[in-house]
Each structure stands twice: as C-alpha cells, then as structure tokens.
Image 1 (cartoon, rainbow over the protein chains, first blue to last red):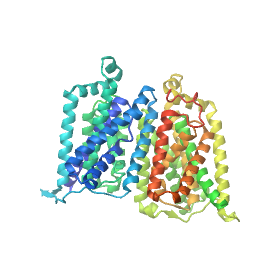
Image 2: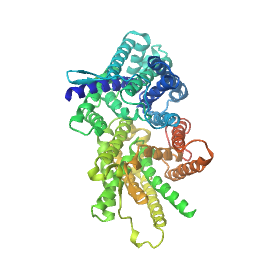
Image 3: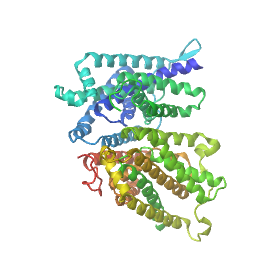
Image 4: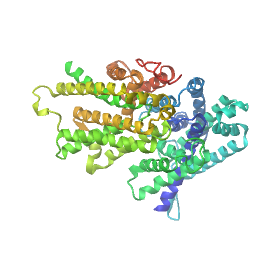
Amino acid sequence: MLMQLVVNGIVVGSIIAMGAIGLTMVYGILNFANFSHADFMALGAYIAFLLNVTLGLNIILSFFISIVITGAIGVLLDFLVWKPMRKKKADLVSLIIISIGIALIIRNGLIFFWGGGSRHYDLPVLKGTEMFGVIVTYNQIIAFGTALVFMIIVHYLLKYTRTGKAMRALSDDIDLARISGINVDKVIQWMWFVGISLAGAAGVLYALETAIRPNMGWFLLLPMFAAVILGGIGNPYGAIVGGMIIGLSQEISTLFLPSEYKLGVSLAIMIVVLLYKPEGIFKGTKI
Amino acid sequence: MIEYLVAIGLITGIFAIFALGLNLEWGFTGLINFGHVGFLAIGAYTTVLLNQGGFPLWISMAAGVVLAGFFGMLVGIPTLKLKADYLAIVTIGFSEIVRLILLNEDWLTRGPMGLHGFDRPFEALIPFDYNYFLFLFTFVSLAVIYILLEQLVHSPWGRVLKSIREDEDVASALGKNVFSYKIQVLILGSAIAGFAGALLAFNLQYINPRNFIPMETFYAWIIVVLGGSGNNKGIIVGAFMLQFFYSGTRLLQDFIMFDSTQMASLRIMIIGLLLVVFMMYKPQGLLGKKEELGLGR
C-alpha cells in the first residue's frame, strides 16, 4: 500500500515539479505570484485534445505542437499585459490581481468551448504492469519519463545556454543584469515561453494520469505554490525537489487522511515553511 | 415585479457588505485576500449550526462573526509579516479547505446536502412578506457598517492603513506596528464577511457548499475594483453594477444562442477581462481618486 502511494506520489510530484519550474521562474524574475500559471496547464491539455481528438493527429505530435502553442500564448501575454505593466513600473500587487483575471478568462474560456465535463485523449487503453505488488500504469511511466526528460533539458538550458544564464542573472538581480548589457525584455519573453510551455506539458501529462477538465489546474495551483515556497522562490531546482516532496506527502497522507484533504497537506506544509523558514529549504532569491 | 426587485436588492446588499470587508483589506490597506469567501462560509455555517443546536439566533450570529474574525487572525499570523503575495496564496488555499471540510464532514454539515430549517431574525413577528423585512434589515445593516467604516477610515487608525497601503516602510519608520494593524484589518474584514454570511443564510434559507465556491471571492473583487479601491461609496455602486450586469445578461439569455453554461462562463470571462483592464488602465476604479491610490504610478 505504502509503496503504491510512493509510486503515485513520484508521478504526481514530477508533474507538480514541472509546473512549479515556470511558476518559480516568474516569481523570481518578475517578482510576483502568477495565479494564472495553473490554468495554462489546463490550456495545454485542451489544445492537445483539440489536435489529438478533434483534428485526429497522433498524441505525440499533438503534445509537442500543444506545448509550443501554449508557450507562444504565454509570450503573447507578455506583449499584451506584462511588458506594458513593466514599462509603467506597476505595483506588484496589481500584477497578482491581473493574473487572477487571466486565470478566470482561461478557465472559463475552456468551459465556454468544451463544457465542464471530463474528456480523454484518443489513446489505446493499456493495462498497468505489476511490479513487486505495485501497479504502475503505462501512462504513469510515460508521464514520469517525460517529466524527467524535460527537467534535464531545463537544467542544460539554465546551466549552459546564454539565454539560460541570463535568466539566472535576472533572477538574482534584474537591474544588475540590465546594466551588464542583457536584453531584459527578450530574456523575459524566453522565460515566459519556457515556463508556460512546461506548464502546458505538465498539463498534458496530468491529463494522461487523470482526465482533461477545465478546473484541473485549480487543484494543482496550491501544490505548485507550496513546492515553489518550499524550494525557495526563484530556484528551479528547489521547485523540483519541492514538487516531489509535495507530491509524495499528498499521496502518502491518504494513509491516514481522507483523500479529499490532499490540498490541505500542501497548505499545511506551506504554512509551516512560512512560519519557520520562509526563505525555503534551498536558497531562494527573494522572500 | 416588486418581489423580483426586492430579491435582487437583497443579494446586492449582502454582496455590498461582503465587498466592504474586502475593501477595508485591499482598498484601504493593500492586503490581497483571495479567500474572502471562506469567511463568508464560516459566518453562514456557524450561525446555522449553532442555531440548529439550540442557541438563540443572536448568539449564533455573533459567534459566526467572531469565529470568522478569529480565522482571519489565524490566516494572518504566518503571512502578514511577509510580502503581499503570501496572504493571497494562503487565503485562496484556506477558503478551498473550508469548502472541502463543509463538503466532506457530513456528520457536522450534511455535506453536499446542505442545511436548512433555522431561525431568521424576527421571522415570527413579521406579518407581511418576510423578504421585505430582510431587505430592510440588510440595508440598515449595510448603512450601519458603512457609517462605522467611514468613521474608522477617517480616524488616525484609518490613516495608518492608507500609509501601509502606499508604503509600509514609511509606516513602520514612523513607529507604527504594521503587522498589528494588518492583523486588525484582516480580523475586521473577515468578521464583516462572516456577518454577510449570516445574512446570506437568511436569504437563501438553505445553505450548501456550492454557495461558497472560489468565484464568490472574485465577485467581491470585481465590485471593489469597479467601484474604486479605498472608496466605500464606490463599493455600494459597484455592487449594484455587478447585479445589473448579472440580471441584464440573464435577460439577454433568451436572445442569444449560447446555453446557460456558456453564458455563465462568458460572464465570468468578462469579469476576468474587466479585472485585467481596470488594473492596467484604471486601477482606481470608476469612482476612486487617482491621487489617493499609488498603484500604477
């Protein structure tokens, strides 16, 4: 039983981690909590649904096209909303409220076009395999494997590419980055692309695990914020570790708590961190 | 027709009270509470449960208000010393947990079945349609809360709140205990939401967790943002504007090809869009004073 929950926790944790990377990058670089991030996961899942089921493309192609489109929408929003607000040197609290407005638009846009019910990708139904008494479904293996590959890609991007290094510089000190000649707007647009397309990818993987629903992101928002805060804001590696811890704790908690209260576990962990170690377990850039 | 207007007026009055609580927090102090509905729920359920447990209505209502304020304090403790974002994150989580508890603890709340059969103020004494009385009761409460809040925000205490909103470092440099002020505001704002919750229960006569979905919080937000943050008069106007928008789009329903789910989602999309547009181009709202609000300058 415990081992089964650990397996489920690792899979969900890797999905939370993937979403949390984008959330923590925005938080670290632009300095605000983006409440629309989770709804981009749902958006990614629905775009993939549109491609896979409505247009009949195969799922792998749909997955990749969907994350590119989702990421592009993230960049478009930078042009429409976030960049003008940066130019105005807007108060950070306004950005948070704008982000909730965007969240409402996306979530209800999905309901408008696809209704409130669950949907599924056009996939062959594969039975799970049993290993040492633990059932692992193929979708779980695919979700975890894909998440792992994406996290490795992000690691290389941040460590070895010019843009990635610039992103880390922005996260440390945006003004210092600007005077050292970094094109801040361009790097921020790349950050939106990477962060939001990761969210879209995580959304498709989560939909494989569960179902495609307009409010699927909503149930991951709190766990993602918990992961970001636990791992130290602005620290993508912290977000990955935080995501795994949150995913595992949520699943293991069902041993002694009704599973309806999984979200409560995220909230409880977050409050303990805020009370005793608000900077997170790894060094975050800002608290 | 008059019954319809009274029914609509009632909802508007209750939402105006609910939004006045949020305006104290966001409009005057700059606190982002995304879980305001949680306190509405605590007020409603406490009032109903205690009353059903045999307590007099006034005591049950008072307990609902106090408990909502108490939870406001609990939520504030881990978050209000940190940046504004943390309160937003924790409150949105808190309100969801409150709803999940209401939904799942059947032994206490009857879960999704909800609660009905409870007293309403002076119900036995009213010889005419009770809704008329409740309408009066709601608007007298609204007037009292409005006047008290106006006095509070124009007192020295209220001026400290505005200074916290504009620049809390200045407030603390002047020797004000910013954390303590913020906690007081969150207690008071949540207590007002709790009171609105009791009124909501009286109006609905039947409460269940679906009345307390996260969207209710954002109705209060759009009222505050439209009406003008930090402007209590604007809040009341904002509540009427939201109601007008709602009733108007409901009347339009018959002429549009969308079904009711699509119409509901379209309505919320418009609210989301208004939030974005107002925060970008007119953060002081329709009636707020731009000189007073430092946002976006």
